[in-house]
Amino acid sequence: MAGYRDLLRSPGVARIMAAQLTARFPNGMTSLAVLLHIEHVTGSYGAAGLVLAATSVGQAVAGPITSRWMGRWGMRKVLTLTTAVCAVMLTTLAFVQTVVPVYMLLALVAGLSTPPVQPAVRTIYPKMVTSRQLTPLFSLDASLQEIIWIIAPVLITFIATQAGTVPALVCIVVILLAGCAWFILSPEVGRVRIPRSRRKLGKVLTRPAVVLATATGFLLIGAAAAVEAGVVATFDHGGLEAGLVLAVFSVGSLAGGLGFGHIPIGRWAMARRFAIVAAGLCLAMVSLDVWWMGGSLLIAGAGVAPALAVMFAMTTASVKFSDTAEAFGWVGTGQLIGSAAGSATAGFLIDGVGPQGAFVAGALFAVAGVLVSIVFVRGFPDLRGRDASPIPDTEPVPVIT
Image 1: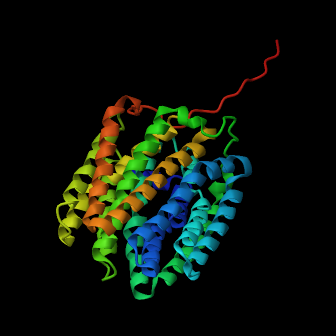
Image 2 (image 1 turned 90 degrees about the vertical axis):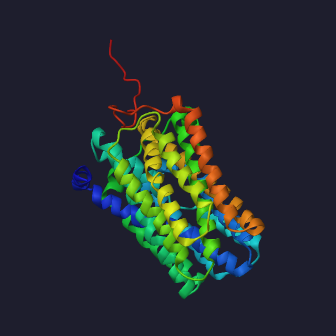
């Protein structure tokens, strides 16, 4: 813990971390609020899953593109535009009563305009700390972001059940505008300039580490999205149980992230950490009892933040600084497509066989993640004792002869 305190004492680190966590706080609320709102309006979890999937698909498509725009037009301009559009779409989704295809269109545009805060801050981090501190910083970031998933589900479930789903969506818009404004106005966002990439869009996917981070992110977040839908369907609108169980899932992730943060990242790190998630989700299939589910998800959560930390570190260490934002955009795209797949699959299984089907889907996603991590273990970089900073950008230098 002393190492984490030293990190937070580094100039600007605590401020930028707090700002980006606030800006990303709606990420822990939006999917649950949309799921509850659309299910309330239509009476179908399948329809709610489709609308939620449209949001995730929009975010997935936009991820690499808006991240790359930050190198062309600057972080502040891109973040300001996307924040404004996203806020308008979520407000419209809350107040307009319409049919499912229109809800899907609104959700798609909201996803396309999601502010690329995560690629921005993960591009800024290597410029704020030493190379030795970078891997622990990614672990701390992955752990602290679980605060979002601990508080946000409980808060949004309370608002949705006590005041209604429309006020819940309005609350998300207010937090989105305030949090993004804080992040955009942070000095570090104006101080760090992302070089314009000279490579074509998608060229970073020739890096095996980026492809593996994208694929494992798809499977990890797919599992988490299926679990979220299953927990909500299990407890329906009867109280705060859904939010509390999801908070326990995140508490496990927070504890796991802080506990694994000091451990060097080798080739087998992802397989070991994914195995923890798979074990917990397999246990969750056994019973829908609230105590059993909470204990199982506590175990599963212990592998989530550590697995995310591996993804962040291996991505940063494998690309040039000018390509870092785009690389994280692709990793985010994998996670968001996973969220769409997990939500949609779980939604239809809930309608077909009940809430337990969602936990089966989550366990299958996690087991697939373990298998990918084992089969392609040689593609994961060994970062033990190695500089995890991005590869420096170089260009030909004219020489007078």
